[in-house]
Length: 102
Image (cartoon, rainbow, N blue to C red):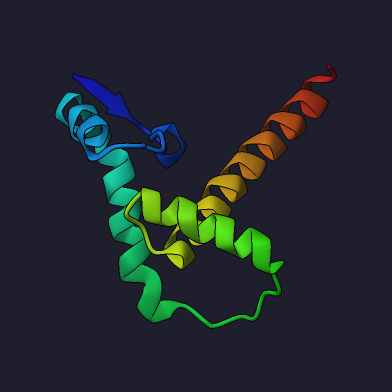
């Protein structure tokens, strides 16, 4: 059985049969599920912000989220979280390389 560790790995399906076949052979990595659950539980500690987005971009984001059975705001928060983690990892690597003198 295949496993996904990132929601970007889920393709956009043109038919329900193709989607059913995909999910019959694919499972979601436990860590990804835990991240989704954690993101939901943190909502009580969140604040509301205003973000201006081009209407066409928002429409595309909503379609993409719908194809993944996600709320578009949750998907955006997930993207921000993933990017923040990547930036933090990159920053740590840079600090270590500078420390070593490479």
